[in-house]
Image 1: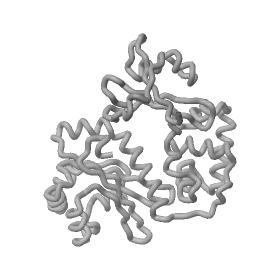
Image 2 (image 1 turned 30 degrees about the vertical axis):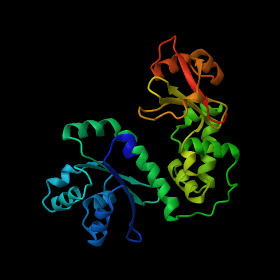
Image 3 (image 1 turned 30 degrees about the horizontal axis):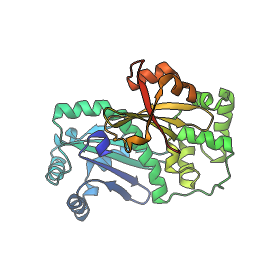
Image 4 (image 1 turned 90 degrees about the horizontal axis):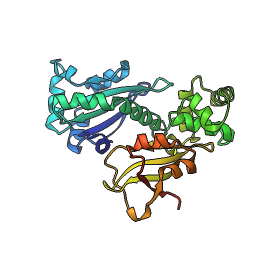
Length: 296
């Protein structure tokens, strides 16, 4: 994440209020982690207390203006945590909370611009980390591995990957009523009141793996001039495919494995819209697309 978003550090803390335990993973230096643990700073860290009670992201500059908290953040900066920080609280359907934190050494102006640009993506990353924490920490439910039908598992995986019911209906070729009925069945079988709770319990029970949060990749598209990946084709549980685009900076490996195809042929092969491909990839109408099929 730090590399992808251009951050100095990233950290996630899972707050178990029932057992008074904080589980964490971080890119902070070992020296700061030891200093933090040895001095029991978790008991005075306002980010942790904030994560227990709040739901909106908070910038660390708020704490810098509070005399009781400024020394903690000054010490963190001396240990290389980062000059700027943002903490995003998350909560799962069972009431357990977590805090996802990012830091940077950008100027204040650059930092504000970065946060504005990537905040929605960071919220998504925070939710994924929070769900995965259920698996790592060991929350478990006794659901059979065959508790859900194939169609229900297909819908559940799409829900986990962030798709909404109307899009799922379109992807799977079902009516909206059928998808709603499948979701209701999933929630009943997993003893859940919401789709978010059903996804979390499926993760905990081992019905969903972390890879299920992402579509199955079918092909990669490359910008040959820049030698970077520019997009890909993903396959959902139904028969349909979707074009996704990659942010800049993903280096393409083994360019010899890519071959050129015309946009119209690519659109026909995967039942995609040629105009959408041209727009998403920033192509000219006479340009070819360089593609590599992942399973070839």
